[in-house]
Length: 619
Image 1: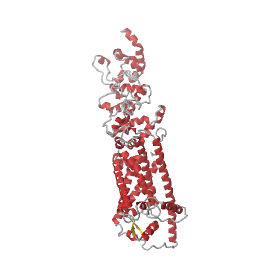
Image 2: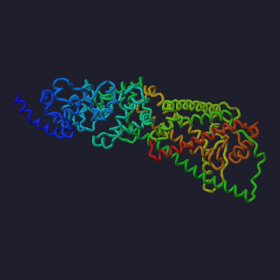
Image 3: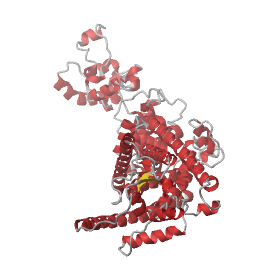
């Protein structure tokens, strides 16, 4: 007994040194050394003195021991320790955790309570605690994260980085928004940290490219349950380098990984660049040059037509002022007999097709632009409050795409009818294709462009046109290009498994770039250039109603399409186009209201797009 006390003497002195002041301040009646006189066979005095609780007396935790004599007689038993008396924050977090729900309490994890030392941000200690119950198969420990933590890299992800220390939440329904968000949110904590990634030689391109993808855009808009998150491809715990044969993203395993969401995925399908970067010419040359080509098309088109619009806007304003000044001076305009007699320009089928164009285009724009600019607050507002989620927006987008294919088919049928069926047009199909009634560009358009430029710069009169102007022909031809670019790429993205059965997956990367940039070109062009050419030019502002009722008065016919009227007079067919009756009041009111609504929506979207670009939004 004496020899044992001699061995414990240094530790007892250490305990007294730490516990003495605490005991004196707290008025504790029982010295820790007294407790260890009986319990040293289970509790190491040295270990306890060195622990985080070493400065506390035993009765700081075992508060029920107030009478040593009664305790020694067994009248006062050691009760359950209430850690929350000191650890209020940790206790509050634990109270709402899945551990508390499963009746896993403090001491179940902190089994070394009498020798417990501060973890000092050493994640290895956290892992050591968690694997007491979890990771029995060493899945995490064999992962790239687990190995890095074991090697002492405190930047690598440990259990607490994803699940927290005490506030460990249940993942819940695997299909729930909270669960699906968790699959990506916890990964971004580290991988979106540029400083952390830089000091670990890890590129942040994974986060950037994910956020630019359809999956990432849905996540950013607040609907992660609709798409794949990081852990769906890379797994939650067994994250391994792609070169590792056991990795979920190893080329040999990619088909099975993709098949979790895309059941009909093929090896060709897996050629998709999950983190392809269109700015990396060396690694992704196809994406790089596709992006360059589309950007060049976009910039070139806007540069030409916006400049054309500005010139027209200024020249039209000046012309209107000149007409007003002439009227004030008493100059009477040239009298046109029956100037207000109405003539038919479009038939009902043309009006119907144009209404389909408006409906489909507005629907596609409203449902597509929030996805493209997913980092903008207005995009999140629209997706949440107007569509009620990306799934609904996707449904609207696909419905409107279906309408697009309908009106495009209608345009093809009308074109075929124009070339091969109509009996009122002279010549064979080739002569009709390049004739005055055709929407196919011809040599006449070069003359018209030159005439408009001379008028813009005050070097000549404003030209009069035939049945179709060069900007109207451009709009018509653009429909065919748009159907190839937007329609083709859209179908690929709509049915990836079908196209992935015979096309390499990187074609979806190309399709995404083409679809996105061509859609931006189309919306920007229609809502700025087309709106101006049709409704916003000074001669027509605020709206040209001809496309809604198909009619226009004779004086407008002569002013804008004098050459067409002249040709009709020479053929003696002008009265064939005289309108039998004008459109009704109710029809005009409804359709004009629809037209103004469409213009307002389009201009609003232009403002939002410009704001997104100026704010540095995704593009």
